Length: 231
Image (cartoon, rainbow, N blue to C red; front, side, top):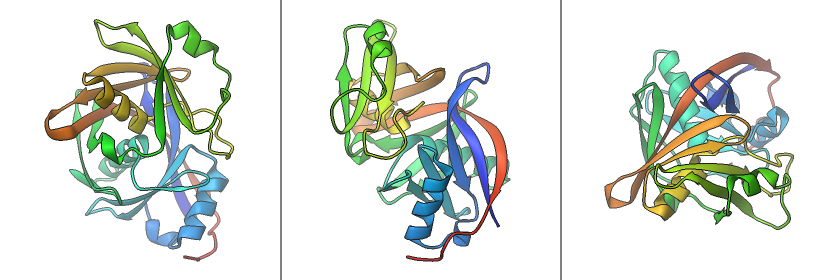
């Protein structure tokens, strides 16, 4: 049996919201790309992350329909789970590059580059009410991060994320990579309310780096049948 830990990433201070994430801490138990993709599809979360080497922080990320070189909320969730397991890491190693991670102010943080965020487009709307009124998903193709200022001077905004990639995920509750991309595009720190009840903070740093942080709440540990060993 494969144990999958389910956590919620980017919860609010009272523990509500957050995007559910599957974390397979024993990545070797699902060794092939095909098997990992199938397990991610079975779980049905926006993303599932496999830990291939806990000590080195080597991870592998999947949506229900694709493998990703980089993503925000799976890395924050994986870092939190590893810390809870007594294997804290300060670097997570992804296909896109090495991602620094740490805990600060009750948030788990990662540092990456907006250039690593592929296939996502941001679009500003006139008001938070317009963002709230969008259907899930809105018409069109391609990954859309719809957002509007709530208080531009304070850097607070409302956002919703729509993958529109043809799988069962019509809307992401919370999206770290899109938050990273948006902060880099705006060139400023932002505090984001996304989805039904999720909270994301993104901070722009020097030399092309952007940090994203949020709270992580544990949900459950779930045993799943082994999937086929196929690469």
